[in-house]
Image (tube, rainbow, N blue to C red; front, side, top):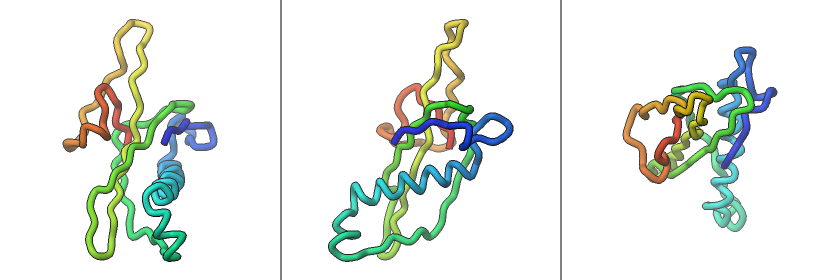
Length: 122
């Protein structure tokens, strides 16, 4: 899923507000559930309560910045399904010709979720 940090999603410091990550992630979770568990919701009248959420803010998304949410199933047991999502963007080439600094993720990420040169935000 792709997004844009519009002015209504940003705080007075000119970057995406922490609460906007949760709001955007709710939309992504519904899309993720519809894509992978549509039969569960429609045929079996299943529900999907959210047990917990945890965020690690690494680098801010600037106002009008484009980003991408990449998600995968992190694990499951008899009751819970853990969905792991990453907010990433791609570096812009500056006037000087050098790309924006790319931060190394705090933990190894699956290669498919963290493409080369991507910037990890959350």
